Length: 225
Image (cartoon, rainbow, N blue to C red):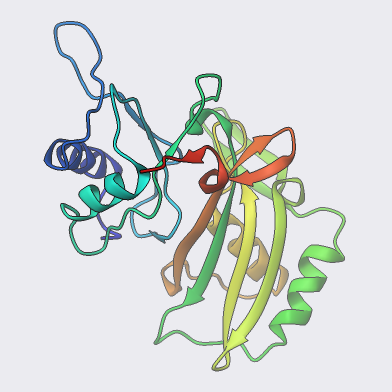
């Protein structure tokens, strides 16, 4: 499933809404389409437990019935875990996305450095005032401070292999790819960084609210039977 692109995933969900008989609303005009938007499209090759989409409906089943109906038409590898109603005043998820949480593991067959990863993570993130990198843009190159875009960074070990955990800025304003953080970390170690050595897994996506960062899954309310 991780190799399915975002546009294909969107078309897949459009078909699932019809198959599950969700009373989804359509736009007006000559070529009407389902009113649906994804919070933060997932990059190809990344797995996830926390993906969100907004839909507009004319009428709706209860949360439990909608989840059951949708999962009955889902393919292996995709599962609907929540179906919640937002108020009319709530903004769309894609407009409030502010952070994403990742767990990153090394794939088998790649060399594991003989270092104390937990200590190095603390030295890299907690003890540095800034983490500067040079990023290529359409207008040239610019230096950015990753430290301002990283909310948390930790490394644990399982079976002597590092497991990276990070919560980073996401969304339309400041979107930080986890690969950039890993690249900066390995540069800090003065070691080569091999992007293909890591499997990215997104744990959750967060929105910016008056109460701070909140999981999109905690917004809205369950629909009773």
